[in-house]
Image (cartoon, rainbow, N blue to C red; front, side, top):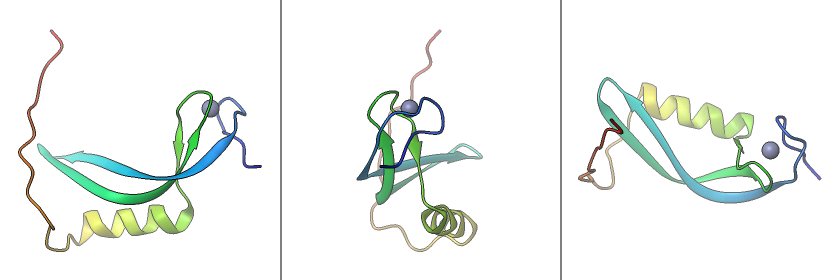
Length: 75
Ligand SMILES: [Zn+2]
């Protein structure tokens, strides 16, 4: 069993969405394999996945879809 680096809870492998914001642009990368802590919700990524996400940000491929995302501020 893989354990969470924060709370030692159990990490379960899931496929989820990774959201990254840079220079006012929001990137949504779907179908990302991740390990999610069942206790605190922390997400961890394998080295390979981290590498792939970084290369997306460096050299973005053509998006499959352009989303319209509402933005809010908690004031
Ligand atoms: Zn945890």
